[in-house]
Image 1: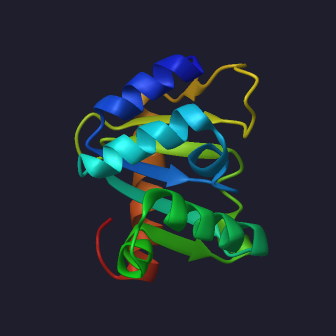
Image 2: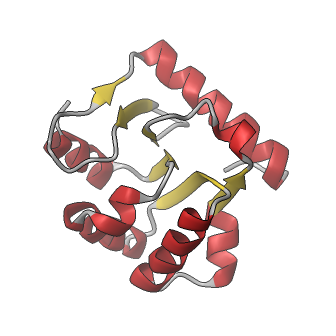
Length: 143
């Protein structure tokens, strides 16, 4: 899957679960930031699992300002994990429509267009389950 195909997939999704080591795409890649802005305006549900780090703290402030998101929405949409819990998510991973079609993709944080990995159905569902398990453990409710 190419980055262009990934953008089309995200554009159609009603919910997007993102496991990101740095919020690179959402804060630094224009095509994605424009898409996220439009999707948030159309009430697409975004959920993020990110490491609890200084870089993430900085990028979350950028995200909040860029998308005009309230403190309450940031609390609702983001789960910050200690490094030892974040280890399973090495590359930036996104799960599209986890409750229905469940398509999971991963890509390194780069803009060189080398492509995107699309996981098979079984792996996509496992990644979605792992995401949901962590979310429920720390947020005490479903994403």
